[in-house]
Image 1 (cartoon, rainbow, N blue to C red):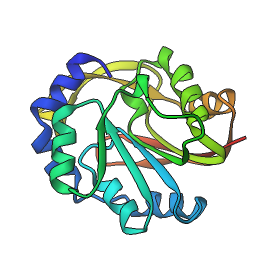
Image 2: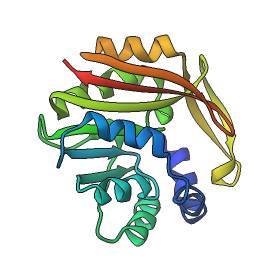
Image 3: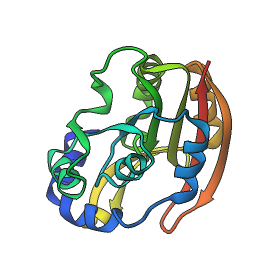
Length: 199
């Protein structure tokens, strides 16, 4: 995530958290939970308001939420005071190898440059235990472009868009086996959701 995007999240952190925290994606979350072991250790990438960390904790999972925005992490800590949150960049994750049973990356990869995706996926593969599960959602499209992001006060930020084949190919090249992927219409974007397993 670049500095302009981080600055936008810092500036509109409360607004963003207020907007996103109540909107639970129950279908995606429950499908993810069905694929992981009980008492799994989960990494929530770009955890935002802490909404999904809270959801996983309610099911008894051990979760760490990371985000590059300090103010977003402050908002998450206020909403989920018992949660484990860290300010950390997706491109420089600092965890031991094979530390997590599962990784939840809801709209995290979208903020990377496409050229940086292989390295990040390789890191995520390393952080997962054997047969660990990863969920990734990205916006459907074919390029990197600047958009006005409604949830951030219409700040202009760069977003990477992907095709379904492109995301699947990237996961396979990083050593994952695709469990399922599908396209889903959202309010403002069309999304690609992928569930994959570490080989």
